[in-house]
View 1 (cartoon, helix red, strand yellow):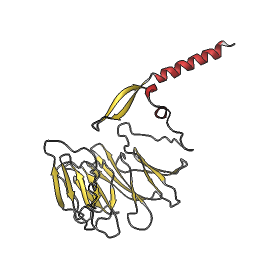
View 2 (cartoon, helix red, strand yellow):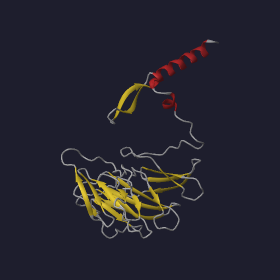
View 3 (cartoon, helix red, strand yellow):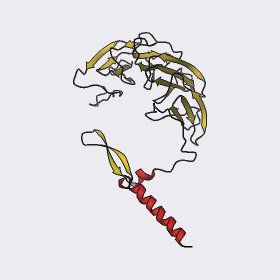
Length: 281
């Protein structure tokens, strides 16, 4: 009668040993700041990396994913219902889900134009005291989508862009200081696209504001970065193409550009604006 428990213990020990000897991939940054990967045994990882953290009640949650296009860069957090606690805004596949801190899905909507690969932008666009949610979508090079929701999930505006995938997160900012935010994003369309390649600034109704779009000679790389660099009270926009960094005024006029030439290419990242010298600029 004692053989069966001993056999189970032996099998359990073998299973644990096998797990410890399993190869996994670890990411790390080398001395030059380059991110690299290496294969290590699972047992070589620290316990916290193996075991993870204890989830909150109601979590984890599982959602379906597209087989080709995966969501990137995480989720958005915002207090959509003014109850003092943030909701989780998850964009994945062709859906947006709003989830509370107990793991309850408060509402779900279908996204127009394809899959959301990047997080939503959240802000009070129209200045009425409630938050709006903006999500951009893409589906290969075939199409893209522009989606605006109320804080309760009502579709305020949506449109599909032909031959123009919107593979970035938008920026919400008041360019003309009228108390109403514009929705600023980059399009990377072909000649037959419904919107041009470049920086777009739309209002809540999907209309381009005066001075935009700012068309670019090559593919825009990512989400624009906004900052008032000249102290005039208006925001400037910085955006990269694969071959240049461009500064654009709040009225849609080019202020300057830095060409990379053949030395290097700009990646699909947003520029950073930093006051290195502490002089307020």
